[in-house]
Length: 122
Image (cartoon, rainbow, N blue to C red):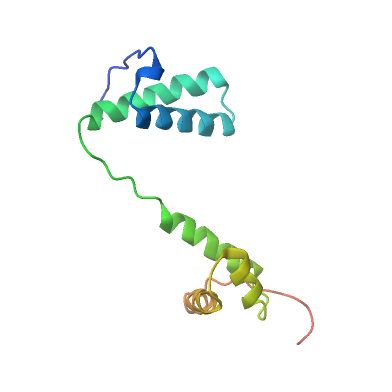
């Protein structure tokens, strides 16, 4: 484990914009997860300092986490799927109807569709 010496950086207004945005985003995320504003700021500064320590001077690509988002979206589509609402799901999620068909088909193949007990036959 790398132990970074936490730098007490004052005057955040002088920081590069990306570090300001990263710190603000972390503070917001920590507060949304129940930390006090003060603890969130402390933790955000520690996290940003660790990132600077480990990666300072490098260009870093942060993927957008699309797989995680796509998997969650597809799970919601599967949960909302009634068997005949492809068009409304497509509109709701900004997809083509064909894309919704592909998502449902893939999840059915993987046996990842929720079991529905709607009582009675249709």
